[in-house]
Amino acid sequence: MTKMFFAAVLFSTSLFAADKSSDKPAELNLELAKKIAEKAASCGVKNKWNLSIAIVNSESNLVYFQRGDGSYSGSIEAAIAKAKSANDFQRPTKAFADSVKEGRTGLLSVKSIIAVEGGMPIKKNDKHLGAIGISGARSAEDDQCAQAALE
Image (cartoon, rainbow, N blue to C red; front, side, top):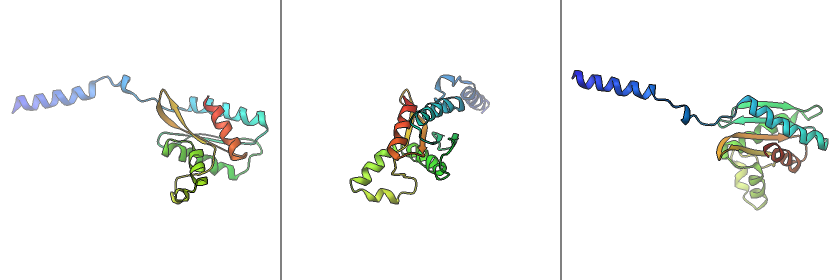
């Protein structure tokens, strides 16, 4: 009985003592989110588009938000919704917009799907980190700035 107890304690402590630093998943931190948003904002400024920019992590939690001067108040929630939709389904919101145009209107009944361009997943080394959502210009222009931010 004592040997079994000792073996169980030894095994359980070795699980906690193991170095997991190499197994740590890539994360979307505030610094990276700000860099991505800065590139998106530059695209907006260059084209004279007043943008709201939202960046969420892989759990769809808002990491960073930036509202450009003169952007519409409605663009705030739209940018966040686009980011969450792109994150939750790990695909650009343009894919949903294109599918709806092709007649798959049932997608519109899914609460978290935003079928408007401007949301894109953020990946690093093929690892999904989160997503960006942009609103304030035409949807194709929002998408253009999201793409520019991720290049």
